[in-house]
Every structure is written in structure tokens, then in C-alpha cells.
Amino acid sequence: MSKTTRIDPAKLAETSKTLAEALPFMRQFSGQTFVVKFGGHAMGDDDLAMSFAEDIVMLRQVGIHPVVVHGGGPQIGEMLARLNIESAFIDGLRVTDRATVDIVEMVLSGSINKQIVASIHRAGGTAIGLSGKDGRLIEARQLRRTTRDPDSNIEKILDLGFVGEPLKVNTKALDVLKQSDIIPIIAPIGVGPRGETYNINADTAAGAIAGALGASKLLMLTDIAGVLDANKELLPTLSNAQAAKLMKEGVITGGMIPKVETCLEAVRGGTDAVHILDGRIKHVLLLEVFTEHGVGTMIRADD
Image (cartoon, rainbow, N blue to C red):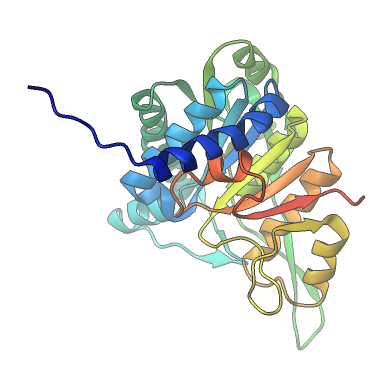
């Protein structure tokens, strides 16, 4: 004798309302390219990683073309510690010598990248792992930072080693994949003019790729709810000018500054909107993209 499933009318009503709310957004974004930066706590949590994979597959199935760029700082740190290689940081960037960059490439392009690919496959999608060296996807140069000595007031150039910044993004491989159902998963490794390997900040790489592809959205997963105002309340939307003002006033501080700067560069480069989201929320991508109010902060061009 089969069991009778008890139907909850309230739950059915809520589900139907959610689906109806999502439909206009599915129509609006079908055929568009979204670049998604995957990082933070979600990468180290199996449930959240699987939730992320399911969201990416869902985006593709409704006609959106997702391109995933991932980080991996904690995993790199763990591997370096295991190999007794000490790390130093300047302004949040890992000083990367020749030995370190080999480990960085191994972790990012190897284990992390393939784990994300495997998760996409388990969620029912098809993905391929790439690094910025494949097809010279991300041509890079050494990142230069300066510091000023407080006593002498002399400006000095800091040598970060093989830390790079994007010089050019060649989208040929991504353009080919766009014609298929294959989702590209990109490790933020760049290639220099002589074939040298550069470690690139994942936020920076995602912003450069979004600009080169003319992506309609750049979605950045973080470990915070989004951009907060002076009272620590979430700001659902920000214009380019408002975001710049908050940084100038010191409301946006610390590690959020480079993230927001990347967002502003992407918007100025032609991306319609950039979203800063809390990757610790299950299915945060679907909640942001397919609901009226979203759950994070959207930064858009000035009206």
C-alpha cells in the first residue's frame, strides 16, 4: 500500500509565488553572460559548494551563460604550510616567489579547479576547467605597488614577485564554449610575455573577464552580506558615485575597498551591474538573480 503524501497548501502557495516571481527574470536574462566569482567560506563547505554548483547549472538551463572564476587563498596557505614554505603578505597580496607560484598554480589549476568541475557534473551540468594560461586567456604583467617611507618620504617600489595583473583577456576559447552547454571554470593564473606564470587576485581576474566578455552581470561571492552603510545596515543598491563616496568617507574600509574598486571598474567598463553576495547563504545566486529585491548589494552605473 502506497503512502499518501500530505500536501501543505501554504507551502504550495509560497512555491508557486516564487516560481512566478522568477519567470520574468529568466526571460530577461536568457542569452546573457554572467561572470561569477566563487570564493570565501563557501569553497570550504561541501553543502555550500554543492548549492553553488546547482545554482550555476540552473543558470545555464534557463539560457544564461555563466563563467566561473574561483579563488583559493586558504587552500594555497594550507599547502604551503604543509610544505614548510612561509608566506608573506603586503596589502593583502601574497608575495609570490618562483617556488610559491608553482604551488599556487598546482592548487588553483589542479585540485580546486577540478573539484568545482566535478561538483557541476554532479549537479547535472557540463563544465571544463581552464586557467588563464590556456589559450593565453589572461595575458598578465607583474603587479607593481609602491610605499612611502614615513621618515624620509621617499617612495619605494615593492617587489611582490610573481603577482600579476591582467593586461589583456583573450576571449576566443570562451566564445567557442558559449556556443555549447559547457560551463568554463577559470583559475586566476595569468601568463606573461615570456611564458612566465603570474598569480592574479581572483576578484581582479573576474572583473577583467567580465569587462572583456561584455557580461551583463558580475556576481562576487564573499563572506559578508554585501556593502554596509555607516550603521552596519545592508545597502541593497548603490550607484557608481555613491560607492565612491562611501569609500572616500571611510564607510567602506579594509578588504572591501579592493572588492568595491573592482566592481566600479567593471561597471565603468560596460558591465550592467555588479552584485556582492554572501556566499554562506544556500542558493544565494538564485535568490539574487531571480527575486525582486535580491539578498546582496547591487552596484550599477550612475543614472
